[in-house]
Amino acid sequence: MLEYPSKHTSALALQSPSGAGAAWVAGFGLCDFWLHLFLKKVEKPIHQRTKKTYLYKMQFPKIAQQIIALKEEDLKVRDKLIQEGLLGKGYQEEMKAVHDKNAKALAEIMQEVGYPTVDKVGEEASQAAWLIIQHAIGQPAFMKKCADLLEEAVKQQHADPKNLAYLTDRIAVFELKPQLYGTQFDWNEKGELSPEAFDDVEKVNERRKAVGLNTLELQTAIIRQQAKEEKESPPEDFDKRRKEKLAWLKEVGWIQ
Image (tube, rainbow, N blue to C red):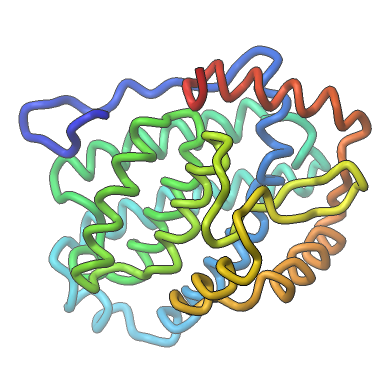
């Protein structure tokens, strides 16, 4: 695994998904509409504070503004694709370009300041960094290292354990391993959005409760309702999509 951040290493050489597997990528997270829903909820208190107070408390206000701008560009492109009816119809080049550019920019920032915790960049920018990391799906080494840094930040009470739960599960699903918190959903053979593989529902709910998440049953209902509101639909050919998934995971290095 890449030792990162380090003053003696350059930012990660980022790779982009391409080929047959790329078409599957958009379907995996449906462009993460539930991640955006979650992010909006945790960001709400920030909007009630004055900019002066918010910037005064952080160590790196200029970097915070840079990270927030990266997130806003992500959301801008996502909203544009929704309006054009292209969200979920393959991994659009425009969206992929933003994800790769943002991941590279964040990697460079982390070379300088480490993981963007709340005490360093404020709550909004810290949450924005987490979203950028969640979207860096074509960079396994980067995402795994970020998870290690985030875990340490959570131990020091400088980051939200819910964010670590989402990132840990995302990595597990990409590596075809059972998730611990049930945060990652995908379409099943019945055409329903359901949690990806996990070990035991009771254990999952215990872990979710420990980090402040609702039950898996309630979250499933929320996810399915959100999918309806965003007019998302299951893949027409489930087996084809499953093959595309495996091809993409191998292509970018999540599995051998």
